[in-house]
Image (cartoon, rainbow, N blue to C red; front, side, top):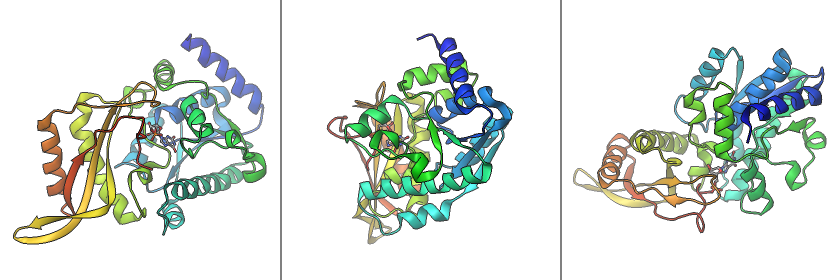
Length: 310
Ligand code: XMP
């Protein structure tokens, strides 16, 4: 792929699609939405409004880090605090697909309002090829696929969706991001799913449970990142297990550690994490998060498992 030419073509495409109207970009800080934001910004400059929805399901400090990176690229980011709305929509939901649908509906309703407020007629989104392939194939209900599953975003939500990188796979997206001048912390960023930590909490997604998994995620990322896996994270199970607190038995949470190697997320192998690192992760999680009494390492490949847990 000629990366430079791809960028130029996409800039022209966004320019001619949007014309003199306004567009809004849904930035998450992942490599996909970051690339789209830079392309759209180059295409239409001030007519692009960039919003970052704080859904309460991000990793530690993510909203602040992302807005700082983009302000250094002279792209302003408005952070919309929608945490309560997302948690309300996820309340009492246990079924994975119900959770994904609740997330998606809230995502589009929050963005719908932001679009209306901004006067934008277009939403720029970082959908990539595997999102479409897997949603069409019924593997997943991705939060960011609408037209592909027969929902008309213009009728349903009042805007048209522009997806500049929908033909690309992850390695190509990273190349484009690098060429577009994004920092390494973005183009080498581990994929992080749209519905965020909600995909890593089995059972009900509450602020307390998300706060627990956020801490565990940070520990796992800190310890496994030096191995440069495709993705490494923690998962909170809905079941509990028995542990010991000094001399008393207590029933506590179970965390699964998952780390995978993959090129495009369509298939994945388990990372062969050295025993020492796994031991350290277990020790850190159980001491830094006392509500957790058990830590396990997942060894399943994709297929048959998916990478995320919901
Ligand atoms: P799975 O779990 O389907 O994940 O093996 C494949 C890749 O996609 C990411 N993922 C998502 N990304 N919205 C996204 O933007 C989503 O709803 C979503 N679900 C999974 C996952 O992290 C992995 O890299």
